[in-house]
Image (cartoon, rainbow, N blue to C red; front, top):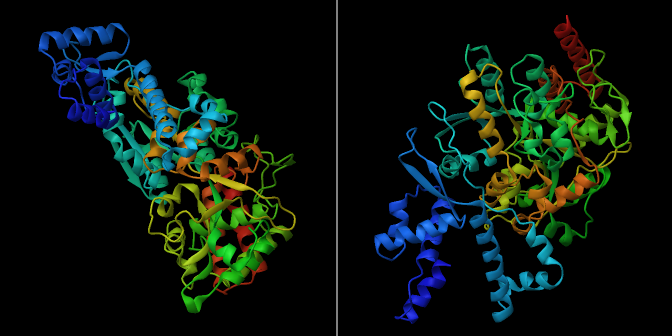
Length: 554
């Protein structure tokens, strides 16, 4: 719109300045960039005399296009913001301009938008999520909102958008990021303090049971009306995974399934079909494994400890084996009673042996440094074109989806985990929920709750995605037409969710799960480096896991 107005001004010297449009343009740009707007600064953009500009501003406020919010406790100073009505109208205007351009000029970039308009696209467009609007009352909290997060691409996007979110909530935001193991340590250490250092903490899904059982995080239904979160909009598995004992303890900030990323171009060149079973995956990995040419078949988490522990549990799930004696139900295994005390490890089983042998087979077609490869190390060589396939979380897709120089850019397709003989294709979900510490001081609880709602709203989550994230915890966000245009990953994940392939039972969030993950990661690593046989590794892991669970319960 600014470009159109500028062009009109350069062509028609007699063009009359429109103060309403000029102020709306300035207000919307400042809102999207997280900049403060006062009445004086807005009127200065109107292009008319001050008194006239103030009257025009009053007209916009009376029409419900502009809202004001106090900047001080006295209320004498305030900032101006676009109303929900203006934001929604601006979104529709942008969509209409695209259609008009396509219809009038037939621009190739807009051809699809034009055809969508005639073949049902208007229905999708009507569901487009608009930018978040500011809270009607700024959060009143000493020192601002303090957030503890994981140092992954999505949370780094949130850090980059900090200024915009400070405008939205009306206070400073201080974000501290750690690696996954250090984050777990800090969350537990923070719980030992008399008063929490953080208003909101990011929690990895497998930790929910441990942190809830230890009273580290608050059950959200004790401090807020859960319906304000619109629970039905979250991917079912992601929302259920945030529960313990039937109560919600966190709000999904990232629902990021682990998928199989594969190079469509390499598969096409080799005449290979997309792998849907572990057997066909091994066949494809063998065909595409060309070490002499600097290319390997597949990358995956095989580093000792936490990384490999996750991989082993998910491999077990691929073969239909949970790591606990969960009851089989339609579509997977029962996760509603994980707080019961009769659960035992099921690691040393025939199906788990199949999973262990599958990992041994993968070694043949993996990079030589596979035994030190973890979360990011498996995606970087895939993005660099050094491997043909990789198991990876969707949150890591920006490494190649946002890099036009990557050989995987525009050439990647996404599948759930290929299934073993007794398994079905599943996409084990990971990611983080945002929680409120139990030791948060009472005077900060209300502000923390409002910030939690704002940070996890559909509007906020769409903003993360349009700025580089590749996780969509909500159905509405994954179905947004703007989001769908950015990556095929959202449509793929939504389809997996509707097919009930998104599951969290592969890593059941019981209090002992972190220790069991570490145990599996250590014993299976010894197996991969040839120190013990698969049977020995499983037997040792089973004994250690049983001892761990028994010790905690005593």
